[in-house]
Amino acid sequence: MTEPSAPWLVRAADTGAVAARQVDEARSFWGRFRGLMGRASLPDGEGLYIAGNSIHMFFMRFPIDALFVSGPDASGARQVV
Image (tube, rainbow, N blue to C red; front, side, top):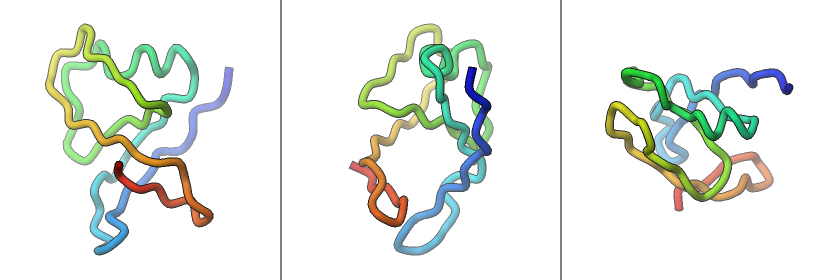
């Protein structure tokens, strides 16, 4: 089992504005599968990063906004696609 990563702070590249103050990464197969299932809500400013190009909404109790991002560039930045 891998250790959880530290939460990410997500900023807009053009303005530096904080888009999310705490984004956790689902690193394992089960972490990605579970995602946000079982949670009653997701507080404002929080998110979940799931590597890949698909998501599911099975057993979700609340609507979400989803962003799909590119792989990291040389600086580690990712672009919303």
